[in-house]
Length: 624
Image (cartoon, rainbow, N blue to C red; front, side):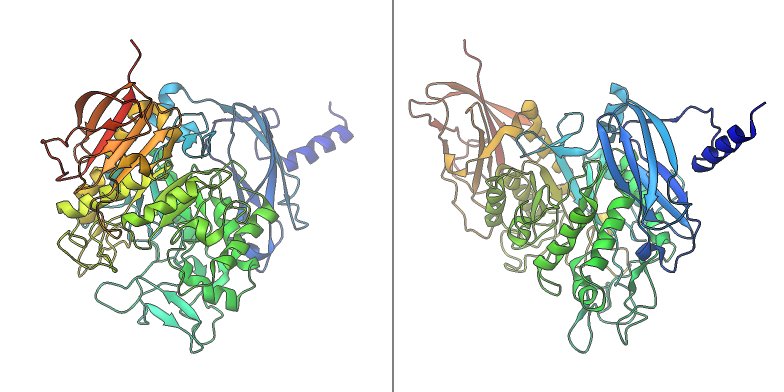
C-alpha cells in the first residue's frame, strides 16, 4: 500500500498537471503544428484582457523561451505554442496574478518530423518563413525558398469573406465563400493572403465614413458602403465586432467601441480562417488594425500601453500559426497619428514581451515605404522585413525598393500595395494608356505586370503582393453589396491575377539563384524611355555579383537594348519570357564583347520596339 504522505504528494502533483493519467506518455504532435494550452483562471477579473498577463516557459531541443498567451472569454486563457524541432518539449505556466489556475501548471508533448511528401503536400509544414542568409529574400525554416505571391483581402475577418462550415465547393458568384476564394487562389499559385485583423470603428450606422468629433479628432476614415456615405460594415458572420460597446468617446459611445475591452468571439471566428489558410499551405500576413483608428485611440486611451496591449493580443493569439505580422496598416499618413507614435507602441511590444517566440517575421504595409516611415531595424525594433505601397503606384516608386535593398543590415522587401487592377490612378486619371480601365482588359493587366516584375528586379526579392478592384473595393474592400460596381466573385477572376504565377516561374527558373540578384537598372540601356509616372517605356535589370545570371524586364514601348556588366568574351544562353503566358522563347547563345556588353536581339515578332512587355534571362553558358 502507498503511505499517506506518498499519496498526498502524488495528489498534489496530479493537481498541477493537465487532466491526463500520470502514467500517460506525452501527447504527440508534429513539428510546426500548433499546440494549444488551456488555463482556466481560478479568480474572477473585472477586465481579464486588460488586467491579466499569462505565459508558459517552453523548453525543447535548442529552445528555451517565454511564450505569452491571451484571454479567450469567461475564465479561459490560452497559450499557443509549437515545436521548432523534433523531440521532447515541456512547459510550465505563469502569470502576473496570484492565481492557482494560471500559475505553475506543467505539461509536455513530443514532436515528430513531417515526411518529405507531407511537406510537399502542405508547404506550411516546412516551418516559419525567415530571411535568407544574405538578408534579401525569404525561405522556410527547413531552408527551401519561399517566393511570396500574395493577394490583398483586407476584410477577411468579416462577413464579406463568408465562412461555410461544409467543404462543398461553390462556383464564383454571390454564394461563394472564403474557402472557395482560397481554393481559387491556391490553384493560381498564390501562397499568401494579406488581411487586417479588425476594423473596430467601422459600421454602416448612418454616420459618415469620414467621422470626426467636434474638436476634429478622427474616429474613422473608412471605405464607403456602396451607394452610401456611411462606412462599410465590418462585423463577422455572427454580427461580432472586435471590441465591446459602449465606448468612451463622449457623444459617440454607441459608435466608437471601448478599445480596452476585447470581444473574444470575433477573434474565435477569425481563428478558423487563419487555421484554414495554413491547412491549405497559405500564409496570412496579419496587420492588427488600420491607421484611421489612431487619433481616437491615442486621445481617449492610455498611449502607447493600450495599443501595445492590442498588438500583443493579436501576436500571441496567432504566434503558433505560420504567418507574418504587422503592428499597423499604414497606407496613408493622413487622418491618423504620426508614424513615430505607431513605432513607439510597436517597439514597446518588443521591449516588454520580446520578439515573436517562434521567429514570425514582422513588417508593415506602408506609404511610401516602411523604411521612410519608421526607419530601419535600429529605430523600428519590431521590423524584420520592409514594404513599399500605395503612394503613386507607378513605376517611379520602385526605386524605394532599391533604397531598401541598400540598407544595412539587409532585410527582405516586397511591394505590398502596388497598382491595383481596375483602380483609377488619382494622379493620372483615365488616359490613352488605359490606367483606370476595368480589370479584365489588357492595359490593366499590363500595368500589374509592370508592378510585379519592376518591383522584384528593383530589389523586392521577397516576392510581390497583388491587388484588384476599383476605389469602392473589389477584393481589397470586400465588395458584396448588390449596388457595388465590382464584386469579390468577379474581381477574383480577372486575368492579371492569373499572371502572378508566371512571375514565380521566371524568378525561380534558376532555382535559388534569384536570391543573389542585385538591382542594376543602369546595366540595361536605354532604360528610361517613358515618362516617370507611368508603366510604359522603362526597363529593369538585376544581376548576380558573380555576373553569371541576369534577369531583365521590358515594359511596353521599350526600344531594343544592350546589356553591360557581363563577363568579357563569355557566352550567355538567352531566352525571352512571355509574362502573359509563361512561355519561353530561345534567343540563342549571345557573346559578350571585350567590354562585357551584349546587344540583345530584337523583341519577339522582329520588333525593334516592344509592342507589349517582355522579360529576358541571360545565364552563363558552361565552358567547353
